[in-house]
Image (cartoon, rainbow, N blue to C red):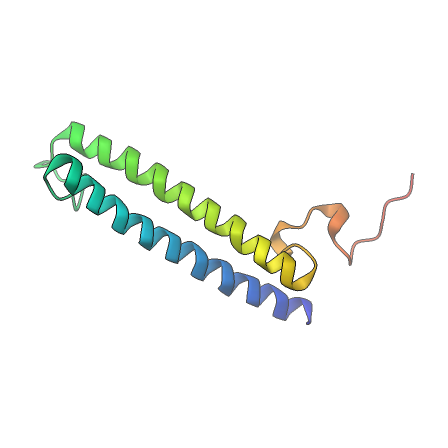
Length: 106
């Protein structure tokens, strides 16, 4: 597979994984929030009609959990990519792992 093709496959694969994880986490968060508070989560925490404590709590919880879900999805996608191609995705390679870069001599 050409390097450009490999990069495009990785971009598409990681995008789908990250968006899927974020959507699934958002759904779980909405359901959990409603079960815990009895109210639907704030649609727009910046709305002045939303209590500031509720807005901050929603921002902290949703931001942290969605961020973690996206990170774990990207790591899992990189693992699958590595197993199928034998190398890390193009944007995750360290300098010494780049097959096109000459090996430094000491």
